[in-house]
Every structure is written in C-alpha cells, then in structure tokens.
Length: 368
Image 1: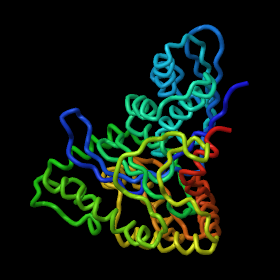
Image 2: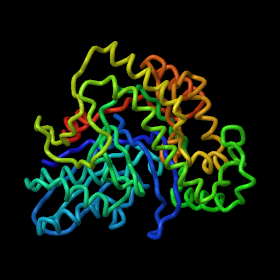
Image 3: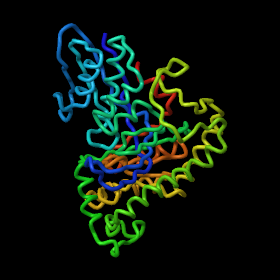
C-alpha cells in the first residue's frame, strides 16, 4: 500500500531582497511558517526501475523537471537502490501561488520514500538533498516557524509561536518568481536621489535602492525580527535560541521532527489566544514587510486590492506570500477569519480558512 504524506504549504512573514550574488541568486531574509493547507503525495515502491509521476492537475509536470522526481532520483542514488518509484500528487495548493507547493511536494516525497524503503535518511542528507533541488525545500525539512537566509535555503528553526488563524486568498494569477526578481533588479537600477517612501508611494519607491541601502534593509529586517520576537521570547519559558543551525532529525518523542529545545507545552487556550494577539500587534509595529509587493502589486493591482480587503476585514497582519499570487491575512480569532473568507468568496475571490501549524504538529501529522 502506498505511503501517503501531507504536503503542507507555507507563508512568508516578511521577505527582504538583497543584492544579487556571484552565483546569480539574491541574498534573502525571510520567516517561513507552515500552514495546515496541504496537498497529498502518495509514494509506492515496486520491483523494477524508473520514476513515474501522476497528477490529475494538468499544470503539474510529470517529467524530470518535477521537484519530486529530482528528490526521488537523489534518494535512490544515496541508497544505491534500483526500484520503480510511483509518485501521485493530489493538488489543493495553487501552482505558482507563493505557498511553496512544489517544494513541499518534493520533501513529502522524500519522507514517504524514506518510509517505503525502510531506510532512515540522516538529517544532514535530508537537508543536503533538499537544498540541491530548490531554495524553498529545506524549510519543509524543519517545519513550523523557520528563519531563511542565503537565498532562502539556509534554514534555522525559530521557537514555536502561538497558532495564528489565517485566510489565504488565491486569485487566478500565476506570478513568475524569476520575472519578479527581474522586475526588482530593473527597478533598483534607478538613481538613489529619486527615492520615495514606500509607504506613501510604493510604485515610485519600488526600486530606488542602492546596493548599500539594500544591505541596510537586510540589517533592518534582522533588527525588526528580533524586535518582533524579543518580547515573546523573554516571556516564554525555556524560549530556545534564534542562533545555531539545526536540522530535521529524529525527535525525542519519536515524531520524526527536529529536537530544537523550544517549549512544547500546550498552555491554556485563552493564554495562547492572548499571546497570539499580542504577537500579531508586535509584528505590525515591527514593520516587517515583503519586498516582492513593490514589484508584484503594480503589475497585478488586483492582488493589492485583496490585501486591502483582508485588512478591512480585521486582519492584524496581511501580506503577499513569497512572490505571490497568494495573499494571506492573520487574524486574532477563527470567527474573524471565517467572516473574512466568506466576504472574499462573495466577491468572487477564491479563499480558504486555515491556521499556522507548529513544528511538533507538523512532524506528528506529515506522514499519515
């Protein structure tokens, strides 16, 4: 019987784009967080050879370009195995939506294949394979709240955060991430003396940043992140650390996740709700934003309108996820999220109510 894995989506809580590096990638800073919305990936292993991909969604490539194929190829090579691997992808997450669907599918394939082959993959090998295939894959080898640096592939687990109620809106738009980066690069070439405030004139401000200013933005993001989480960490018992790279390994509870040293206590429901509300307000005060909004919103103004609709409906924080097209809002209560989702749907915008999921829940549920 095939092994089924939940392929969870992610949102980006802030994303700062730095200079292009010699390897062609841009330096990035972002906070990823896994969410409950997911695809399902089923993996079966039989005698023979080859990798076969199946999906009813015509947008999903079923050849060597698929990240699932590339991960399976590397796992078989790691174990020096010859087998026929079947991978079936049942889609719910949008393609090119900024929710990390293809990357998550690939890591779900890795975890399911590990179970099918009955051979554990060392944590370092998990992360190495993930990083070789794509920038967003390593975050799904950790789950929960994750700091991404480098071009997003260097991942550091952040302490567990309270659960946020979330509305994810997915207008029928496919935003190309390479094109979004190209637009960013075109706009940053504009003379710095023409710079305007992003908050007052986003289109004018989008690219008027010198290289030095772009480095400064990365520094500012790091400070804002510490400002956002600082109060929460100081009030949390055994808050863990923001420093030190950790990888996905076998946790002490046998759930298959990383042992990060962060608190796992459930706490009272009201306490968790109060902490989530306070943390959302702190997030707004810290001014953490997604740089892609500066180039994506002018090209797709309907996405800006979706963000405004989320804010009008009571979202404490709203943002583009990755380069889009998904736009999400974080809410203090499930009722607010449900009412907002109903309003968006009434206006013809596809939307789902979901929530963030922490690292412990991620690893307890990723394999069915």
